[in-house]
Image (cartoon, rainbow, N blue to C red):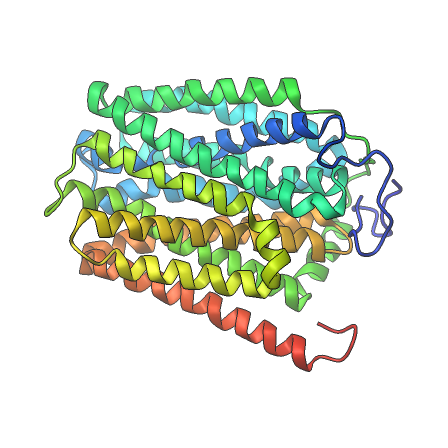
Amino acid sequence: MPPASTGALTTVSAAAAPSPSGQLEPGRPGYRRMSFALFSAGMATFALLYSTQALLPAISSGLGATAGQASWTVSAATGGLAVFVLPLSALSERLGRRTMMTASLSVAVAIGLLVPFVPDVGSLIVLRAVQGAALAGLPASAMAFLAEEVRPKALVAAIGLFVAGNSIGGMSGRILAGWVAQAAGWRTALGAIGVLSVLCAVVFRLLLPRARNFTAVPLDPRALGRTVATHLGDPLLRRLYAIGALFMTVFGAVYTVIGYRLVGAPFSLPQGLVGSVFLVYLVGTVSSATAGRLVGRLGRRGALYLAVSTTAAGLLLSLADTIAAVLLGLVLITAGFFAGHAVASSSVSHTAKTGRAQASALYQSAYYLGSSAGGALGAAAFHAEGWAGTVALGLLAVGGVLAITLYGSHSARTAPPGVR
C-alpha cells in the first residue's frame, strides 16, 4: 500500500479507501494465530505495566515508603509509556510494527527480571519509568498493525481481543503477585511476573504473522508534526482522547488504592486474597471482547453511555463497608471501564483518515497520562478522605466522560452533513 501524502504515514481509514488484499478476518487462515499473538502481547503489557499495583501495601512496608510514594511505582511506569508512545509509534513507521512490538516487549521483559533486586523505592520508581517507556512501542503499534492487517468489519472485535489480553494480563499478574507475595515476599512476586511475561513474549514472537499491508517510509519530523496537529485539530479525535484519559483516571485511582482499603479495617484481608480480588478482570475480558456487538446494537455513543452508567454505579456501590458490595462495585467499574476503552480506542482507529499509528499513539498517551494522574490523585484522595475521596475523584472523571459524550451527541445532531 503506498504511503500517504504526508510522507510519514502508511495507512488510511477503512471509510476512505478500499481494503488492501490479504487482510485477515475471522475464519481466514492466520487470523486466529494473529489474535492469540496479540492477546499474549497485551497480556504481557498489562502484567508488566501494573506489576507493582497489587503489591503496594507490601512494598510500602518492605521499603519504608508511604502510600503516595509507593503509588509512583505505578504512575512512573504509565507516565513513561505516555511520554514515549508517540515517538516510538513514529519509529514503527520506519522499522515496521512487528519489529517495534518485538523490541519493546523484549526490553520491558528484561527490565522486569531486574526489578525484584532494587534496593530502595527511588530506584524502583526510576526502573519502572524506564520499563514503561520501553513498553510504549507496543500498544499503538499493535493498534496500527490490526488496522492494517484486519478487514474493517472485524476491526472492533480484533481490537477488543487485544484489550481482552490486557485485562487477562492485569488480572493474572496481580493474582499471581498477591499469592506469591504472601508466601515468599513481594520481590519474589515481581520475579514471578517477569517469568510470566517472558513466556508471553515467546508466544507472541512465534505466532505473530508477517505484515502484508505495511510499507516503510522515512522518518520525517515535520510530517509527523503536521500529522499530530491534524489529529489534535479533529474535534471527534480530541473527544475520544479525553474519554480514554478520564476512563483511565477512574480505573487507575480505584485499583491503585483498593489494596490499601482491603488490607485495612474493616476488611483486614491478607495479601493473597487482596490479589485474588483482581479476578474481576475477567469481567473486563468479556466486556471488551463483546464491545463490537455492543456498538452494533447501541451505536458508539450509546455504548459509551452504558459504560459511564455502569462505572458510576460501581463507584457508588463500592462505598458500602461489606466485602460483597465492594466486590460487586469493582465488577461494575471494571466492566464499564473496559467496554468504554474498547469503544473509544477502536473509534480512534476508524476515525483517523491518515496516520493511524499516530492517532492511536495520541490516544494511548492520553490514556496512560490518565492512569498516572488517577494513581497519584487517587492515593492523595485516599490519604485525605479515605475511600470516599477516591470515589469522589472517580465520579468527577466519569462525569467528564458523560459531558463529552453528550456534547458529541448534540454536535452530531446539529452539524451539517459531512461535518462532525
